[in-house]
Amino acid sequence: MIRRVLLLCFVCALPVYASEKLTIAAASDLRYALDDIIMLFKQQQPAADVRVIYGSSGKISTQIRHGAPYDVFFSADIQFPEQLYAEGHAVTQPQLYALGRIVLWSPQQNMTGIELSQLTTMPFRRLAIAQPAHAPYGQRAKEALQATGVWSAVEPKLVYGENIAQTAQLAQSGGADIAIIALSLAKFPELAKQGYQLIPAELHQGLTQAFVITRHGANNSSAHQFTTFMTSKDVLAIMQGYGFEHPASEQQGRRE
Image (tube, rainbow, N blue to C red; front, side, top):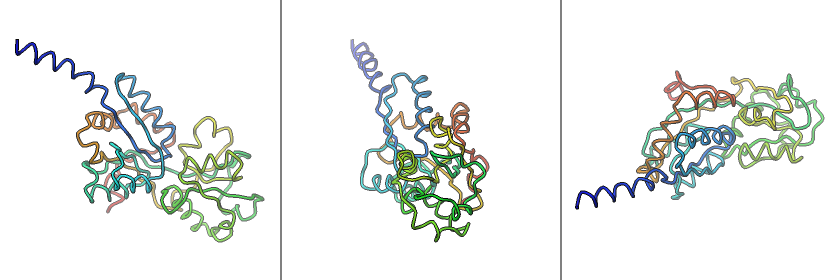
């Protein structure tokens, strides 16, 4: 009788375990790629209950420090998860998942072949970039504009998005004529209607992206399942389709 009761308790507990809620906080350059990845994950784990909150890596880091209930954090810059891990806010060491790139893009014209140096002679009213203070893609855009020597000339025309996805939306809505956005966003069909120009990687620091399981997600089995799933070949194919490079050989390169 006791064995039957124990077995019944175990069986009843299984659905709860399988559908354990997973809350992911992710840099907004992943908006389209991660949506596809979660869709694939749910095909393999039908009971999965996954929620994603997108934003800038810097702001998400601050929210985690203040107790935001995120289980996994996907950052656009490894420095943020490194800091969280060092401070005890993450229970896994940062794991690289992608190398990001920035592009020059416009909803109004094909930017293929246009270099940053040409911005000083082009007729446009506003140039959108993500806020450099807390968005890695915005910081890299600023670095590239400075390295090209056009920062002082275009700064009066700059408008800022809170994150890189909002930066693209700012241009789409007419708030800017040109934008520097993530390659992963420029490859999304709706944005890819106009051509983009890849900005040379040597003009800015690398966008070495990493994830961690937070202290809040330490005992969340779905968090561990999902981060393991992120290393699969199917996920790698999705990431490559959105223009992300694989960081395989650079696990330690950036820190050395």
